Amino acid sequence: MKKNVLKWMFFSICCVSMLTACSDSDSDGGGGSGDFLQTSCFVINQGVSGMNNASMQQFDILSGLASSPDCNNDVFYKANGELLGDVAQDLLCVGNKVFVTVSNSQKLEILDDSCRRVRKYTYAGEGACPRCLATDGSKVYVTNYDGYVYVYDVASGDSLTRIYSGSYPEGISYCNGYLVVNNSNWGGYGGGEAGVAVINVASGESKIIKEGVCNPYTQSVVCGGEVYIIDSGNYSDILPAVYRVDADNAKLVKVAENASLISSDEGAIYYVNASWSYAINGTSYSPLYKLVVATGEKFEILPTEKMKDISSLDVNPENGDIYIGYSPSSEYFGTMRIYDFEGKQKGVFEVGYFTSGARFY
Image 1 (spheres, helix red, strand yellow):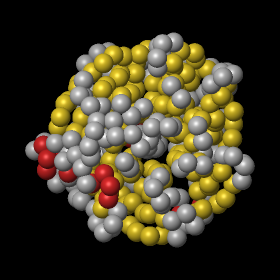
Image 2 (image 1 turned 135 degrees about the vertical axis):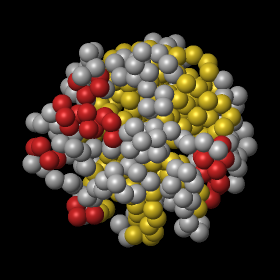
Image 3 (image 1 turned 180 degrees about the vertical axis):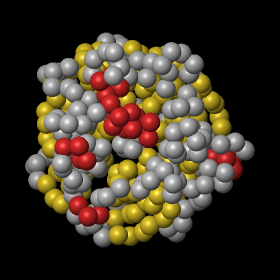
Image 4 (image 1 turned 180 degrees about the horizontal axis):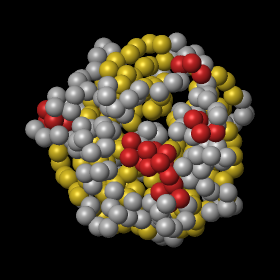
């Protein structure tokens, strides 16, 4: 089991979906915006751990053309003359800025609308490893394995403060004045306790949901004014599942079983099981499902046979297109396939190693 947990950690196949404010997703935050924010999206590729080959691509939604997935020729390298780094974990567009966490390189990059560096923050403390991103439109929140959520001003890029969360925080969402943070406890090997922190942004006060929590990881989205996360289970007899975070009653409510990746639009969550545990407990990849949160209706969008080697799942909130990243091995670049809401393929392009997925404005 430990071998699989370490594999899960260092290659980070289960990657965070786009994390946005539940009521501020269209906020301009920093003021102004580049044209790319209206017509394209970014693709963030983690790269192979220890190989320093993370890359950042731009995909033109209108033309269907993508920039190079090669880290020596990607949009970050072209703008800054250096490589992005080792394991790019998450990317978030807010206003006219782009925030990127690079875990093994222990840094946060803040870029302008041409992908040029505005600020760079490095974390050198014990256990420091920046992970996932969320925003309320004016501030960006960054989880870090040192136990804290770091807060940055969108307009200026300034570092504002940090908020204690818990053991190895991962996925994060902002909703209705609260941060919801997955304290993963590094899959049970962190020396603390797994839990889901609900943090009041204004006061800094928090409560930790521990009952029924096993292994919450990077996956966290907002839908219908509530936060949904994935608990990855124990890679054995406790399977990964989707939970709604009931902040008022400090508990998790299971809404779907067999799920390791999640995304959302205004009224539905999308999920699929592609976890490392399938090889251990005998289950297989699941179909891609859409669950309407208001009614509980569930629809199969794509069959199981199209889910093999999936490493990312993202839904474009503007038109409902589904972006699925496939990463078969560490030896080859992956592919990104785009499907409409009925599961019909609309496009395909090459991405880098172990893609974390598409990120939209």
